[in-house]
Length: 66
Image (tube, rainbow, N blue to C red; front, side, top):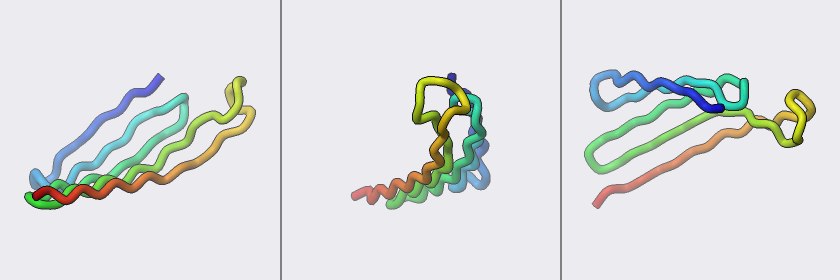
């Protein structure tokens, strides 16, 4: 189960938080006219049983708009 929320600040900065597989997730987005940057930190289960082996990840996405 994944649930999240996003709040816009000054229409350019977006703060995100949520829950993914029972773990908290956080994110930050910058959406300018020619550039979009998204950064997220999340954790997920690597094994079948909950709590057996989790893995933390950081994801960065950069988009240049032409």
